[in-house]
Image (cartoon, rainbow, N blue to C red; front, side):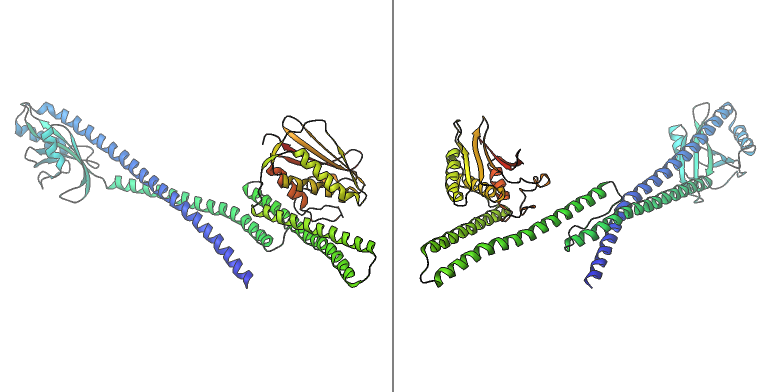
Amino acid sequence: MGRIKRKRKEVWRATSLRKRWLTNTMFVVVPIALVCVAAVMVAFSTYYYSGMRSDMTYRAETTADFFAGYMNVEYGEYYQSCIRYAQTYEDRTDLELQFIDADGDLVASSYGVLAGEKPQTEEIREAMLIRTARSFVGPDPVTGERIMAVSTPLIYSNGEVIGVLRFVTSTRIMDLQITKLTLAAMGFCAFFVLAVLLTTNYYIHSILQPIAEITVKAQRIAAGSYGTQIKTRYNDEIGALADTINDLSNQVSQNERMQTDFISSLSHELRTPLTAITGWGETLLSCEQMDPEDTRRGMNIILREARRLTEMVVDLLDFTKMQDGRFTLNVEPTDIQAEFEDTIFMYGSRLKQDGTYIHYEDSDQIIPEISCDPKRLRQVFLNILDNAAKHGGGKNINASISSDDNFVEINIRDFGPGIPEDELPLVKKKFYKGSSKARGSGIGLAVCDEIVALHGGELSLRNAGGGGTIVTIKLPINQ
């Protein structure tokens, strides 16, 4: 049931993303398409209307110039000439030629109408007043038909405006042509929008499909299937995302194994000293009379194992502080050489009991004081010396300290089998124990590395020539 709900939720999210993407795309594309259609309509309208207006204006002015030769004759003869010209006008099927007197009455028309309702468009009066050609576009006040008209004043020889010469035509055919072109533009824009919609939908699908696959695998990883890998055929951001999740899955899987090993190892590490302490405690309590040497031996074992427990608890507490960001330093000027030598002396005395000896190479240099947390660095020295004793496999440990202008350098070397080369980059990671079978929690070096890093220094490990491992600690002098 939960899987079905999750599947429905994934489908809903994908649908929602697709819908939002398409909606946002349409919000951009559709207005642009409408603006383009409007621009086309305006462009065609302007082109056709401007062309027709220019043509009619030219005809009107040319015809008016022709009639200027009749301006010296009598009015009656003049009007007769206008009627004859209107009756013989060749383009009467396309344009109506009208002669209108100064009162606005129709004198002659190429349509054969010598009398009729007075034309009432505004350009007639304007042409008479301004004495230049004027045009009109719009519904005819008399017929209601949409027309275009151009009127040019007829000026008598004495300078008097005796009327206008007017060309009139219907815009129906032109409007129909503009409408067809506009519809064609709308069809093209609709096709364009549909093409954008289909292309966008395909593009969204090409993105959502691999994302859906990545989501399914990521959910499997989140559910605990660490190490699951995502296969992708894309070499782009989606491929990079898949590779990142694959790396994360491997890292989580590795960390999971390391934590499991850590818990198992820690359980064993805790059980061993507790068993020894419990066993010797019960032995000492149950024997009323016990050989003093055995008693001393038992107490030494209890003390040694209690110290081991203490060291493990300290490492765990420090590690917890590191994880929570509460790990801090109490910095003060410190004679780092004295701290190192005291640590060697104290821990060396303990190691002698097990037959292990620390050989300290005393330096002739004057090691300067540095600003550091002596308690934390002593903890680092002890941890590394303890690792050398546990993992060295031999009876000797070499230690030295030196300095240059910038750093104090401390080297601790054991004479054991060394660390496999492929494990060297990993040994400082938390929980990592590698192939070593020696006791330990796997967090000691991680804590040491953090302490040295907080001092602005560097902790490194390398295999020595002839066997063994060298641990180098570099601490800045002017920090």
